[in-house]
Length: 444
Image (tube, rainbow, N blue to C red; front, side, top):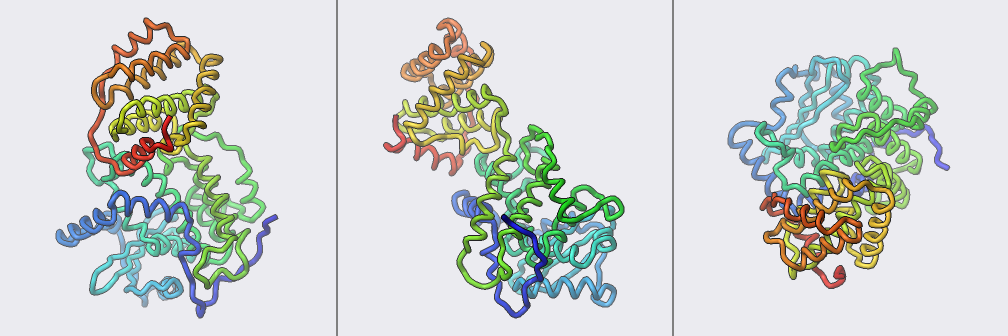
């Protein structure tokens, strides 16, 4: 059983391998975005454009910032300088206060070829209400985003008001990006914990920042924090992981608790990921997966699996699986069922066939006629997403309609009523998935 203990922050004279602490799934998602989606080139191009135009992505955050000189605020300057030194960040440091009632901080690193400049903004309430250890955790969290270059990936966010997209990435890349942003908070929290040295300090900052409450109304102890984590909060059906309030708060607290519970007394040194951090990562992954939007009824799960598996069956009627087709399947799954549609696609033909039969049994036993008609309609949408509705595709749809006990006349009406609404974006993630589905090992 894990236990919490008093732990001092690591000694200054030891070498810290920060990559050991990084949440593995977050690092993997960042790698996918940088490599498969060419985000590294896009980021470099955007950075060059900002430099050429004399703009910086964080200028909007600095509008009300007031500079704090070392002579004016020696304590906070010493704290930040020491934290940067411990993390191996060599840069000029500029501190700012932002008037405001929130507990928050923002860190930006201007990676100039001549000199890197760190701008750290802390709200006035943060500076006045938090203890030094709590400020150290918050500063460490923001520096964690810098250490792992999360700030560079965030430049991919759309600034235009004339689009519904959140990023400059295609659909599947955007879904990965939105999931990555939540995981990035876990990695950043770990750097805050490394500097502050105690679960309670980090948990206190996270709770105060999320609730807006201070010590007047909060009783922050290990026991009270654990009691909060045991509260059963209904999960809202929202697509944006960054807007799930209490659930994200609980996920971050649990991740921090797991980290300290598994960590040895010394967490510095070495280049390999130790077994304790791998154990923590595995449990954190399960917590974050539970936050993902997912059907909460047997019929909902059956509808989702039917569309995924029958959709793949349709796609494989073609000699080549087109990205437009797999895009249609994934968009239907994302819009109606889950934030992680790519994880619903089953590449094992035996498991896929078994799951499809199970879904059909559940739908025939418990779904309404309209629900069955709806999933068949979505299947017809997939069939026409790449162009004409061919005979072999019509046979698949009609066979599945018969399996769902939908009269043939109704099935024909559904097929005729489908309108092609497919886009033409090139998405590397979907192309990769399409190639896997077209491979012999994933065949029928």
